[in-house]
Image 1 (tube, rainbow, N blue to C red):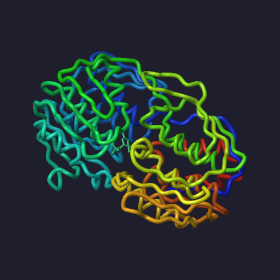
Image 2: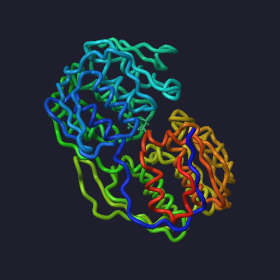
Image 3: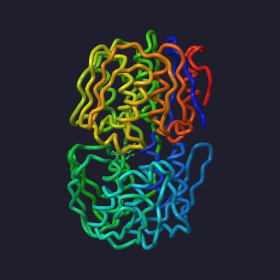
Length: 436
Ligand code: S3P
Protein backbone atom coordinates (compact mmCIF):
# COMPACT_ATOMS: atom_id res chain seq x y z
CA UNK A 1 0.00 0.00 0.00
CA UNK A 2 1.35 3.42 -0.90
CA UNK A 3 1.58 6.26 1.60
CA UNK A 4 2.57 9.92 1.64
CA UNK A 5 4.51 11.49 4.51
CA UNK A 6 4.58 15.25 5.01
CA UNK A 7 6.19 17.47 7.63
CA UNK A 8 5.14 20.83 9.00
CA UNK A 9 5.91 23.20 6.16
CA UNK A 10 7.29 26.68 5.74
CA UNK A 11 5.61 29.13 3.36
CA UNK A 12 4.33 27.88 0.01
CA UNK A 13 5.56 30.01 -2.86
CA UNK A 14 5.31 29.76 -6.61
CA UNK A 15 3.17 29.32 -9.67
CA UNK A 16 1.44 26.04 -10.45
CA UNK A 17 -1.04 24.52 -12.86
CA UNK A 18 -3.46 21.87 -11.64
CA UNK A 19 -4.77 18.91 -13.66
CA UNK A 20 -7.64 19.48 -16.06
CA UNK A 21 -11.24 19.36 -14.95
CA UNK A 22 -12.51 15.85 -14.29
CA UNK A 23 -16.22 16.60 -14.78
CA UNK A 24 -15.64 18.39 -18.09
CA UNK A 25 -13.29 15.65 -19.36
CA UNK A 26 -15.90 12.91 -18.75
CA UNK A 27 -18.53 14.93 -20.58
CA UNK A 28 -16.29 15.76 -23.54
CA UNK A 29 -15.46 12.06 -23.99
CA UNK A 30 -19.09 10.95 -23.80
CA UNK A 31 -20.69 13.74 -25.80
CA UNK A 32 -17.91 13.73 -28.44
CA UNK A 33 -18.50 9.98 -28.92
CA UNK A 34 -22.16 10.43 -29.90
CA UNK A 35 -21.70 13.63 -31.91
CA UNK A 36 -21.52 13.54 -35.70
CA UNK A 37 -17.96 13.96 -36.92
CA UNK A 38 -14.64 14.55 -35.25
CA UNK A 39 -14.16 16.26 -31.90
CA UNK A 40 -10.88 17.34 -30.37
CA UNK A 41 -10.35 17.58 -26.63
CA UNK A 42 -7.29 19.67 -25.73
CA UNK A 43 -5.73 19.14 -22.31
CA UNK A 44 -8.06 16.37 -21.16
CA UNK A 45 -7.51 14.82 -17.72
CA UNK A 46 -5.73 11.45 -17.99
CA UNK A 47 -6.68 10.39 -14.45
CA UNK A 48 -7.97 6.90 -13.67
CA UNK A 49 -11.62 7.99 -13.48
CA UNK A 50 -11.54 9.67 -16.87
CA UNK A 51 -9.51 6.88 -18.46
CA UNK A 52 -12.30 4.53 -17.39
CA UNK A 53 -14.82 6.63 -19.34
CA UNK A 54 -12.43 6.61 -22.30
CA UNK A 55 -12.12 2.83 -22.12
CA UNK A 56 -15.92 2.47 -21.97
CA UNK A 57 -16.40 4.56 -25.11
CA UNK A 58 -13.68 2.62 -26.92
CA UNK A 59 -15.26 -0.69 -25.98
CA UNK A 60 -18.44 0.56 -27.67
CA UNK A 61 -16.46 0.95 -30.89
CA UNK A 62 -15.61 4.66 -30.76
CA UNK A 63 -12.30 5.53 -32.41
CA UNK A 64 -10.42 7.72 -29.90
CA UNK A 65 -6.74 8.58 -30.23
CA UNK A 66 -4.41 10.58 -28.01
CA UNK A 67 -1.50 12.58 -29.39
CA UNK A 68 0.42 14.51 -26.77
CA UNK A 69 -2.62 15.30 -24.63
CA UNK A 70 -4.90 16.07 -27.59
CA UNK A 71 -7.74 13.58 -27.81
CA UNK A 72 -9.34 13.02 -31.22
CA UNK A 73 -12.77 11.39 -31.06
CA UNK A 74 -14.44 10.14 -34.23
CA UNK A 75 -18.08 10.41 -33.20
CA UNK A 76 -20.57 8.21 -35.03
CA UNK A 77 -23.75 10.10 -34.08
CA UNK A 78 -26.40 9.19 -31.50
CA UNK A 79 -26.74 5.62 -32.75
CA UNK A 80 -23.10 5.02 -33.70
CA UNK A 81 -22.21 3.06 -30.57
CA UNK A 82 -21.84 -0.73 -30.74
CA UNK A 83 -22.83 -3.32 -28.16
CA UNK A 84 -19.90 -3.77 -25.75
CA UNK A 85 -18.55 -7.32 -25.87
CA UNK A 86 -17.85 -7.37 -22.14
CA UNK A 87 -18.93 -5.78 -18.86
CA UNK A 88 -18.06 -2.06 -18.69
CA UNK A 89 -15.94 -1.50 -15.56
CA UNK A 90 -15.78 2.15 -14.41
CA UNK A 91 -13.41 1.50 -11.49
CA UNK A 92 -14.00 4.17 -8.81
CA UNK A 93 -15.85 6.64 -11.04
CA UNK A 94 -19.38 7.61 -9.99
CA UNK A 95 -19.61 10.13 -12.83
CA UNK A 96 -18.82 7.43 -15.41
CA UNK A 97 -21.36 4.91 -14.19
CA UNK A 98 -24.21 7.38 -13.70
CA UNK A 99 -23.75 9.33 -16.93
CA UNK A 100 -23.24 6.15 -18.92
CA UNK A 101 -26.45 4.63 -17.56
CA UNK A 102 -28.33 7.55 -19.10
CA UNK A 103 -26.51 7.06 -22.38
CA UNK A 104 -26.92 3.27 -22.47
CA UNK A 105 -30.64 3.12 -21.58
CA UNK A 106 -31.85 4.27 -25.05
CA UNK A 107 -29.29 2.29 -27.12
CA UNK A 108 -30.34 -0.58 -29.35
CA UNK A 109 -28.23 -3.09 -27.45
CA UNK A 110 -27.62 -4.82 -24.12
CA UNK A 111 -24.93 -3.74 -21.67
CA UNK A 112 -23.73 -4.42 -18.14
CA UNK A 113 -21.87 -1.80 -16.10
CA UNK A 114 -20.07 -2.12 -12.78
CA UNK A 115 -17.16 -0.71 -10.77
CA UNK A 116 -14.90 -1.21 -7.78
CA UNK A 117 -16.18 -2.10 -4.26
CA UNK A 118 -16.85 1.60 -3.47
CA UNK A 119 -18.96 2.02 -6.64
CA UNK A 120 -20.85 -1.19 -5.88
CA UNK A 121 -21.91 0.29 -2.53
CA UNK A 122 -23.10 3.65 -3.92
CA UNK A 123 -26.80 4.32 -4.66
CA UNK A 124 -27.85 4.01 -8.30
CA UNK A 125 -31.64 4.13 -7.83
CA UNK A 126 -31.49 7.93 -8.08
CA UNK A 127 -30.67 7.38 -11.79
CA UNK A 128 -32.38 4.01 -12.37
CA UNK A 129 -35.75 5.25 -10.95
CA UNK A 130 -36.29 8.19 -13.34
CA UNK A 131 -34.83 6.25 -16.29
CA UNK A 132 -37.41 3.53 -15.63
CA UNK A 133 -40.12 6.21 -15.71
CA UNK A 134 -38.85 7.03 -19.22
CA UNK A 135 -39.32 3.36 -20.15
CA UNK A 136 -35.81 2.05 -19.58
CA UNK A 137 -35.28 -1.59 -18.76
CA UNK A 138 -32.60 -1.66 -16.08
CA UNK A 139 -31.82 -4.23 -13.42
CA UNK A 140 -29.25 -4.54 -10.70
CA UNK A 141 -28.65 -5.79 -7.19
CA UNK A 142 -31.13 -4.74 -4.52
CA UNK A 143 -33.86 -3.99 -7.05
CA UNK A 144 -31.55 -1.93 -9.23
CA UNK A 145 -29.93 0.26 -6.56
CA UNK A 146 -26.49 -1.36 -6.69
CA UNK A 147 -24.10 -2.25 -9.51
CA UNK A 148 -23.56 -4.45 -11.42
CA UNK A 149 -26.37 -2.90 -13.47
CA UNK A 150 -27.73 -4.50 -16.64
CA UNK A 151 -29.42 -2.42 -19.31
CA UNK A 152 -31.55 -3.70 -22.19
CA UNK A 153 -31.73 -0.68 -24.48
CA UNK A 154 -35.27 0.60 -25.20
CA UNK A 155 -36.94 3.52 -26.98
CA UNK A 156 -37.57 6.12 -24.25
CA UNK A 157 -40.32 8.63 -23.75
CA UNK A 158 -39.74 12.17 -22.52
CA UNK A 159 -39.52 12.87 -18.80
CA UNK A 160 -40.98 15.60 -16.62
CA UNK A 161 -39.11 15.04 -13.37
CA UNK A 162 -38.50 16.91 -10.12
CA UNK A 163 -35.24 15.55 -8.71
CA UNK A 164 -35.35 14.92 -4.93
CA UNK A 165 -31.60 15.67 -4.50
CA UNK A 166 -29.36 18.18 -6.26
CA UNK A 167 -27.06 15.92 -8.28
CA UNK A 168 -25.26 16.76 -11.50
CA UNK A 169 -24.71 13.08 -12.18
CA UNK A 170 -28.45 12.34 -12.06
CA UNK A 171 -29.33 15.44 -14.06
CA UNK A 172 -26.68 14.61 -16.67
CA UNK A 173 -27.86 11.00 -17.03
CA UNK A 174 -31.40 12.24 -17.64
CA UNK A 175 -30.24 14.87 -20.14
CA UNK A 176 -28.24 12.27 -22.07
CA UNK A 177 -31.23 9.90 -22.10
CA UNK A 178 -33.44 12.88 -22.99
CA UNK A 179 -31.40 13.44 -26.16
CA UNK A 180 -32.80 10.15 -27.49
CA UNK A 181 -36.35 10.45 -26.16
CA UNK A 182 -39.57 11.35 -27.99
CA UNK A 183 -40.52 14.96 -27.14
CA UNK A 184 -39.12 17.60 -24.80
CA UNK A 185 -37.88 16.45 -21.40
CA UNK A 186 -38.07 18.71 -18.34
CA UNK A 187 -35.99 18.35 -15.19
CA UNK A 188 -36.09 20.46 -12.02
CA UNK A 189 -33.49 20.34 -9.25
CA UNK A 190 -34.12 21.40 -5.64
CA UNK A 191 -30.89 23.45 -5.81
CA UNK A 192 -28.87 23.95 -8.95
CA UNK A 193 -25.90 21.57 -9.31
CA UNK A 194 -22.89 21.89 -11.64
CA UNK A 195 -24.02 22.67 -15.18
CA UNK A 196 -21.16 21.35 -17.34
CA UNK A 197 -23.47 18.94 -19.19
CA UNK A 198 -25.91 21.72 -20.11
CA UNK A 199 -23.05 23.93 -21.31
CA UNK A 200 -21.38 21.18 -23.33
CA UNK A 201 -24.57 19.81 -24.89
CA UNK A 202 -25.42 23.34 -25.96
CA UNK A 203 -21.85 23.83 -27.31
CA UNK A 204 -22.32 20.67 -29.41
CA UNK A 205 -25.65 21.94 -30.79
CA UNK A 206 -28.32 20.24 -28.65
CA UNK A 207 -31.55 22.14 -28.09
CA UNK A 208 -31.37 22.75 -24.38
CA UNK A 209 -32.91 25.52 -22.27
CA UNK A 210 -31.90 26.44 -18.74
CA UNK A 211 -33.78 28.70 -16.39
CA UNK A 212 -32.57 28.67 -12.78
CA UNK A 213 -32.76 25.09 -11.58
CA UNK A 214 -35.06 24.05 -14.46
CA UNK A 215 -33.62 22.41 -17.60
CA UNK A 216 -35.41 21.19 -20.72
CA UNK A 217 -34.00 19.20 -23.62
CA UNK A 218 -35.44 18.45 -27.03
CA UNK A 219 -35.31 14.73 -27.94
CA UNK A 220 -33.82 13.30 -31.14
CA UNK A 221 -31.14 15.96 -31.03
CA UNK A 222 -28.25 16.21 -33.44
CA UNK A 223 -24.79 16.93 -32.06
CA UNK A 224 -21.86 18.08 -34.20
CA UNK A 225 -18.21 17.42 -33.35
CA UNK A 226 -16.43 20.36 -31.68
CA UNK A 227 -13.05 21.47 -30.39
CA UNK A 228 -13.08 21.53 -26.59
CA UNK A 229 -10.35 22.92 -24.34
CA UNK A 230 -10.49 21.69 -20.74
CA UNK A 231 -9.56 24.17 -17.97
CA UNK A 232 -7.87 23.27 -14.66
CA UNK A 233 -10.07 21.61 -12.06
CA UNK A 234 -11.13 23.90 -9.22
CA UNK A 235 -11.63 20.80 -7.06
CA UNK A 236 -7.91 20.01 -7.46
CA UNK A 237 -6.89 23.67 -7.08
CA UNK A 238 -8.86 23.67 -3.81
CA UNK A 239 -6.12 21.74 -1.96
CA UNK A 240 -3.54 24.38 -2.79
CA UNK A 241 -5.90 27.33 -2.28
CA UNK A 242 -6.48 26.10 1.27
CA UNK A 243 -2.81 25.16 1.80
CA UNK A 244 -1.59 28.64 0.81
CA UNK A 245 -4.30 30.23 2.96
CA UNK A 246 -3.47 28.35 6.17
CA UNK A 247 0.34 28.27 5.95
CA UNK A 248 1.87 31.53 7.10
CA UNK A 249 3.78 33.61 4.58
CA UNK A 250 2.47 31.70 1.54
CA UNK A 251 1.80 33.33 -1.79
CA UNK A 252 0.88 31.28 -4.87
CA UNK A 253 -0.66 31.65 -8.32
CA UNK A 254 -2.68 28.82 -9.85
CA UNK A 255 -2.98 29.18 -13.61
CA UNK A 256 -6.10 28.55 -15.75
CA UNK A 257 -8.66 27.17 -13.34
CA UNK A 258 -12.34 26.69 -14.21
CA UNK A 259 -14.45 29.03 -12.08
CA UNK A 260 -17.91 27.95 -13.26
CA UNK A 261 -20.37 29.63 -10.84
CA UNK A 262 -21.93 26.23 -10.04
CA UNK A 263 -18.51 25.02 -8.82
CA UNK A 264 -16.85 28.00 -7.14
CA UNK A 265 -18.54 27.94 -3.71
CA UNK A 266 -15.15 27.36 -2.03
CA UNK A 267 -13.92 30.79 -3.12
CA UNK A 268 -16.99 32.55 -1.68
CA UNK A 269 -16.75 30.59 1.57
CA UNK A 270 -13.02 31.17 2.05
CA UNK A 271 -13.44 34.88 1.38
CA UNK A 272 -16.20 35.03 4.01
CA UNK A 273 -13.79 33.28 6.40
CA UNK A 274 -11.23 36.01 5.71
CA UNK A 275 -9.03 34.49 2.99
CA UNK A 276 -7.13 36.55 0.46
CA UNK A 277 -8.12 34.87 -2.83
CA UNK A 278 -8.17 36.93 -6.02
CA UNK A 279 -9.12 36.13 -9.61
CA UNK A 280 -6.84 37.38 -12.37
CA UNK A 281 -7.14 37.19 -16.16
CA UNK A 282 -10.76 35.99 -16.27
CA UNK A 283 -11.85 34.59 -19.65
CA UNK A 284 -14.21 32.12 -21.36
CA UNK A 285 -12.87 28.86 -22.86
CA UNK A 286 -15.16 26.41 -24.71
CA UNK A 287 -18.19 27.93 -22.99
CA UNK A 288 -16.66 27.71 -19.48
CA UNK A 289 -15.36 30.65 -17.36
CA UNK A 290 -11.66 30.34 -16.48
CA UNK A 291 -9.26 32.41 -14.37
CA UNK A 292 -5.86 32.43 -12.69
CA UNK A 293 -6.22 32.30 -8.91
CA UNK A 294 -3.87 34.24 -6.63
CA UNK A 295 -3.79 33.24 -2.95
CA UNK A 296 -1.97 34.78 0.02
CA UNK A 297 -1.99 33.35 3.54
CA UNK A 298 -4.47 34.86 5.98
CA UNK A 299 -6.01 34.31 9.37
CA UNK A 300 -9.42 32.63 9.00
CA UNK A 301 -12.50 32.79 11.19
CA UNK A 302 -15.12 30.07 11.61
CA UNK A 303 -18.51 30.53 9.91
CA UNK A 304 -21.76 28.66 9.28
CA UNK A 305 -22.05 26.99 5.84
CA UNK A 306 -25.42 25.61 4.75
CA UNK A 307 -28.24 25.76 2.20
CA UNK A 308 -27.93 26.62 -1.49
CA UNK A 309 -24.14 26.95 -1.46
CA UNK A 310 -23.61 23.27 -0.56
CA UNK A 311 -23.88 21.79 -4.12
CA UNK A 312 -21.38 24.48 -5.28
CA UNK A 313 -18.76 23.22 -2.79
CA UNK A 314 -19.74 19.58 -2.28
CA UNK A 315 -16.43 18.04 -3.40
CA UNK A 316 -14.38 20.63 -1.47
CA UNK A 317 -15.89 19.99 1.97
CA UNK A 318 -13.08 17.61 3.05
CA UNK A 319 -10.42 20.29 2.40
CA UNK A 320 -12.72 23.01 3.72
CA UNK A 321 -12.87 21.12 7.01
CA UNK A 322 -9.06 21.40 7.17
CA UNK A 323 -9.36 25.18 6.66
CA UNK A 324 -12.00 25.25 9.41
CA UNK A 325 -9.66 23.38 11.78
CA UNK A 326 -7.14 26.21 11.35
CA UNK A 327 -9.70 29.02 11.72
CA UNK A 328 -10.46 30.96 14.89
CA UNK A 329 -13.79 29.83 16.35
CA UNK A 330 -16.34 27.29 15.29
CA UNK A 331 -17.35 26.30 11.76
CA UNK A 332 -20.65 24.49 11.22
CA UNK A 333 -21.38 22.73 7.92
CA UNK A 334 -25.01 21.59 7.41
CA UNK A 335 -27.27 20.32 4.59
CA UNK A 336 -24.38 18.20 3.30
CA UNK A 337 -25.85 14.71 3.83
CA UNK A 338 -24.83 13.87 0.22
CA UNK A 339 -21.27 13.56 1.53
CA UNK A 340 -22.30 10.24 3.03
CA UNK A 341 -22.71 8.64 -0.43
CA UNK A 342 -19.49 9.83 -2.07
CA UNK A 343 -16.40 7.65 -2.67
CA UNK A 344 -16.53 7.12 1.11
CA UNK A 345 -18.88 8.51 3.74
CA UNK A 346 -16.89 11.76 3.80
CA UNK A 347 -18.51 13.06 7.01
CA UNK A 348 -17.47 10.03 8.98
CA UNK A 349 -14.03 9.56 7.33
CA UNK A 350 -13.04 13.20 7.87
CA UNK A 351 -14.21 13.12 11.50
CA UNK A 352 -12.26 9.91 12.21
CA UNK A 353 -9.08 11.01 10.46
CA UNK A 354 -8.93 14.67 11.52
CA UNK A 355 -9.38 13.55 15.15
CA UNK A 356 -6.16 11.53 14.80
CA UNK A 357 -4.24 14.76 14.19
CA UNK A 358 -5.87 16.55 17.12
CA UNK A 359 -8.81 18.37 15.52
CA UNK A 360 -11.86 18.71 17.73
CA UNK A 361 -14.96 18.04 15.66
CA UNK A 362 -18.44 16.66 15.97
CA UNK A 363 -20.25 14.49 13.45
CA UNK A 364 -23.81 15.47 12.55
CA UNK A 365 -26.20 13.55 10.29
CA UNK A 366 -25.88 16.20 7.54
CA UNK A 367 -22.54 17.80 8.30
CA UNK A 368 -19.78 18.69 10.74
CA UNK A 369 -19.12 21.03 13.63
CA UNK A 370 -15.44 21.95 13.83
CA UNK A 371 -13.82 23.76 16.76
CA UNK A 372 -11.02 25.64 15.02
CA UNK A 373 -7.73 27.04 16.20
CA UNK A 374 -6.40 24.11 18.24
CA UNK A 375 -2.89 22.91 17.45
CA UNK A 376 -2.78 19.92 15.10
CA UNK A 377 -0.03 17.32 15.58
CA UNK A 378 1.46 14.82 13.17
CA UNK A 379 0.01 11.29 13.19
CA UNK A 380 -0.62 8.34 10.91
CA UNK A 381 -3.98 8.48 9.21
CA UNK A 382 -5.77 6.78 6.32
CA UNK A 383 -7.53 7.93 3.16
CA UNK A 384 -9.96 4.99 3.33
CA UNK A 385 -9.27 4.78 -0.43
CA UNK A 386 -10.85 8.21 -1.07
CA UNK A 387 -8.74 10.57 -3.21
CA UNK A 388 -10.13 13.81 -1.78
CA UNK A 389 -9.69 12.58 1.79
CA UNK A 390 -6.08 11.58 1.01
CA UNK A 391 -5.16 15.01 -0.39
CA UNK A 392 -7.01 16.88 2.38
CA UNK A 393 -5.08 14.98 5.05
CA UNK A 394 -1.77 15.64 3.28
CA UNK A 395 -2.51 19.39 3.35
CA UNK A 396 -3.52 19.15 7.03
CA UNK A 397 -0.13 17.49 7.60
CA UNK A 398 1.67 20.56 6.21
CA UNK A 399 0.07 22.64 8.96
CA UNK A 400 0.36 20.08 11.78
CA UNK A 401 3.37 19.88 14.10
CA UNK A 402 5.82 17.04 13.37
CA UNK A 403 5.30 14.43 10.69
CA UNK A 404 2.02 13.12 9.23
CA UNK A 405 1.72 9.93 7.20
CA UNK A 406 -1.33 9.40 5.03
CA UNK A 407 -1.81 5.73 4.20
CA UNK A 408 -3.53 4.30 1.13
CA UNK A 409 -2.72 7.10 -1.31
CA UNK A 410 -2.85 5.29 -4.68
CA UNK A 411 -6.41 6.65 -4.94
CA UNK A 412 -5.00 10.16 -5.53
CA UNK A 413 -4.55 9.12 -9.17
CA UNK A 414 -8.31 8.92 -9.66
CA UNK A 415 -8.37 12.71 -9.97
CA UNK A 416 -4.92 14.25 -9.43
CA UNK A 417 -1.98 12.47 -11.06
CA UNK A 418 1.12 14.45 -10.04
CA UNK A 419 -0.27 15.75 -6.73
CA UNK A 420 2.94 14.93 -4.87
CA UNK A 421 5.12 16.67 -7.47
CA UNK A 422 2.94 19.79 -7.45
CA UNK A 423 3.09 19.86 -3.66
CA UNK A 424 6.85 19.39 -3.73
CA UNK A 425 7.23 22.31 -6.15
CA UNK A 426 5.60 24.65 -3.62
CA UNK A 427 6.86 23.59 -0.22
CA UNK A 428 10.31 24.19 1.09
CA UNK A 429 12.42 21.05 0.94
CA UNK A 430 11.58 20.02 4.52
CA UNK A 431 7.86 19.84 3.70
CA UNK A 432 7.74 16.51 1.95
CA UNK A 433 9.81 13.71 3.36
CA UNK A 434 8.72 10.55 1.59
CA UNK A 435 6.67 9.95 -1.52
CA UNK A 436 3.83 7.53 -2.02
C1 S3P B 1 -20.02 15.22 -10.44
C2 S3P B 1 -21.10 15.51 -9.66
C3 S3P B 1 -21.10 15.45 -8.18
C4 S3P B 1 -19.67 15.43 -7.65
C5 S3P B 1 -18.81 14.46 -8.38
C6 S3P B 1 -18.72 14.83 -9.85
C7 S3P B 1 -20.15 15.30 -11.90
O1 S3P B 1 -21.76 14.28 -7.76
O2 S3P B 1 -19.69 15.12 -6.26
O3 S3P B 1 -17.51 14.43 -7.85
O4 S3P B 1 -19.13 15.33 -12.62
O5 S3P B 1 -21.29 15.34 -12.38
P1 S3P B 1 -23.35 14.23 -7.54
O6 S3P B 1 -24.01 14.37 -8.84
O7 S3P B 1 -23.60 12.88 -6.91
O8 S3P B 1 -23.66 15.35 -6.59
